[in-house]
Image (cartoon, rainbow, N blue to C red):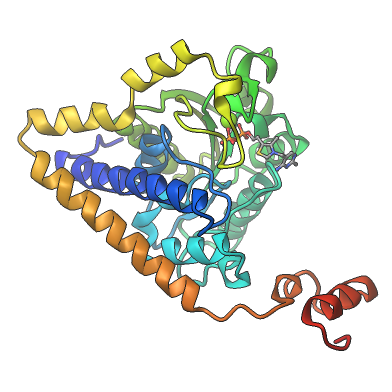
Length: 331
Ligand SMILES: Cc1ncc(C[n+]2csc(CCOP(=O)(O)OP(=O)(O)O)c2C)c(N)n1
Ligand SMILES: [Mg+2]
């Protein structure tokens, strides 16, 4: 296990700040009707970025839920571009081409976890070095897919990291109504694999936990379930009003433990960050977002293309829907 160097922590902070800044801009753009629904990343940055930095983009797969894309910069600028295409409803946003080892967003809760186990086991069968890391939420852990994937991973000894992002909420369902277990990490016992609890506001701790799980997997010692605890600082999505159910005092306490403030303080104490760096990074974040959005908007969007990747050949019902959308004859 290797702790991240200060240089690495600075890189992690840059990615965290870029993600937070872009998320803020996307929120405003959604309110202006310029982009589609967005799930804010606020409060999740240390976990998502810290985990991504502990992986090797050349060999390791990331299998996201839907809140992660802005935090996966380490895997390449294509992630942001595809995310913008996805947000605008472009089918190309549902596919991230190789060699980038990131699966597209997954909205159907927990279905991505068996995919990650399959990818990981596939790498073992092909004798490829690498791991697959699946992000999923506390709410997703109540799905059957979580248990099926964890069980299979344990039996196979697949090189997979199951990273449960416990942000205390599944839309408006609080965590105490989600499980009666002591923790989500405790569920690892049923799979016969290690379960690790980590402070999800501490990028360094998340990096360490993922790094250790990765080393274990690469050494042939199988999967790990990690639970990163943090607090969702924003709404569930732009379609949600959390003031109706999040206790104001809990949110205020969580804001004092904001993962960005914590890491910024650490870097400033060591002379590795200052207001100039902050401002320059925020400007860069918005420029990157604007460019990705411009490119996504320029991509032609054919009517009916939303049906393109359902089946190789349209079913009769899809053919009728396609005809309705395109105003033409059935394909
Ligand atoms: C199978 C399935 N059931 C229900 C939903 C509706 N839904 C969307 S997000 C969400 C909450 C998910 O909570 P969690 O897994 O904790 O992720 P978070 O949004 O907190 O990051 C629900 C119930 C869904 N997308 N898929
Ligand atoms: Mg949640």
